[in-house]
Amino acid sequence: VLLDPNTLSDDGTVALSGYAVSDDGSLLAYALSASGSDWMEWRVREVESGADWGDLVQWAKFSGASWTHDNAGFFYSRYDAPAEGEAYKGSNYFHKLYYHGFGTAQSEDRLIYERADQKEWNFQGEVTDDGRYLIIYVSRGTFRQNGIFYQDLAAPDSPVVELLNQFDAEYQFVGNDGPLFYFKTDHSAPLGRLIAVDIREPAVAQWQERIAESTDTLRSVRYLNRQFVANYLHDAHSRVQIFDQEGALIRAVDLPGIGTAGGFGGAQDTTETFYSFTSFTTPGVIYRYDLESGESSVFRQPTLRFDPDRYETKQIFYPSKDGTEIPMFLCHKKGLELNAETPTYLYAYGGFNIPLTPGFAANILTWMEMGGLFAQPNLRGGGEYGKEWYQAGTLERKQNVFDDFIAAAEWLITNGYTSTPKLVIAGGSNGGLLVGACMTQRPDLFGACLPAVGVLDMLRFHKFTIGWAWVSDYGSPDDPEQFQTLLDYSPYHNLKPGTHYPATLITTGDHDDRVFPAHSFKFAA
Image (cartoon, rainbow, N blue to C red; front, side, top):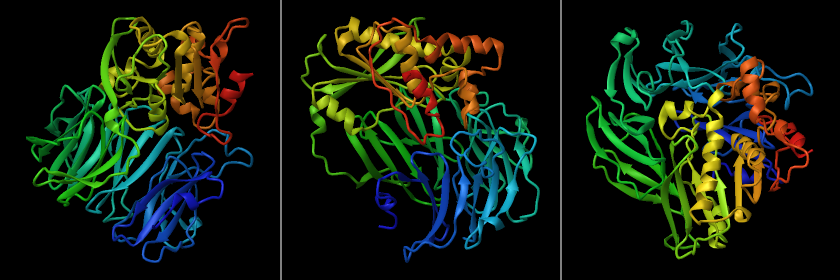
């Protein structure tokens, strides 16, 4: 064992929050975060001996690490050190991209890129597989649209080139063949496509389409063995296909069932890759995939102390308030009689283009084992059906998300799956907002509510730490029109004295510097 997160602290409050292995496999850069904070401290461990070197990189946040191919150091992102007492509540502005030389003090780190004129821009650095270029992702908060800049590492003092700087779409770097860069994008394709951009002739008119937009949502693409591994979402579960360099379909990956597949990492010249697969009743199984034969084989599989065949999962579609069809997974023990007495756990998220796909959780399995029904709807605002589905749950359309969730509860009750006294709703972070808004809008509909680390004060969320970054989804309280929209559904501001609310358990994190605990404290008070 090279690094065991269970030994990082006696009380379990220190977590492994990131890692990156050097190109030759000799060094591990790893990041630790304490008490649930987003702040990260990077260290370096020698793989052969398991010993840490003296490297300590502080005040990193929203950062990965990417090594140069000479194994001499890595790129990372950070903020300036906060003022005393402001680490967990002060706003985070002016992200910067640095290079840390292995074995040196952080004070010697080299600043690669910053923008003093753009306090809300964030930067992420990634070295290309051939080691030639530094890709710089440029984003603003949680807005989907981003820019792509790059630097030629063969000339370290060369300027950073703004390759894609219109911020008109989402761009994910996939790989490169020399100066030909591949990007997964929603530019002119709401569900996603793959394009090739020659950095010597980067005009839009010169772009080449390699994988056209499909009827499913393209979530990610990997470039391996001169093939593109495309991971799609089909009605909120994974579908993976392999294409050649020109975009011709080679084959589909035969997945074990309805669930979530992820991974497919590796160097561009690899002939095999690994992926994980999970479902509501399947803990993560790791498969080895042969890119030449198309065969999958189990690489690691956990020992199960339960029988997955004792449970069943189905997907239904129900109409929301405006008639939009919303998908929902229903999971329970086989043979369970579903009626008004069935305890039902309704969980959702609905925001920030994040898809809620099938995944294993021990607490949900326990719930089903005890005779409960688990329901997971895929609300608008998520990433299940591309750009338009996401946008339909943002800004002045945010009420659609709450309507979708309320409609899920009504459908379960109307169709005899459960009843109000037996129905609990749950969600965390943006999902905590979801629960808070729905319980204040329809307190008569639910038996219990579990808002976890919720964004509950919609008029001041942008005043704390990274809250300003969420205006992409919520809008800004400083805008008069958006202020009124936010006030209309803000859970804290819509609590009414004398109203009988469902039994409610409010949870937060005392060191949470993303969703500030004051949201939950005020809501509880």
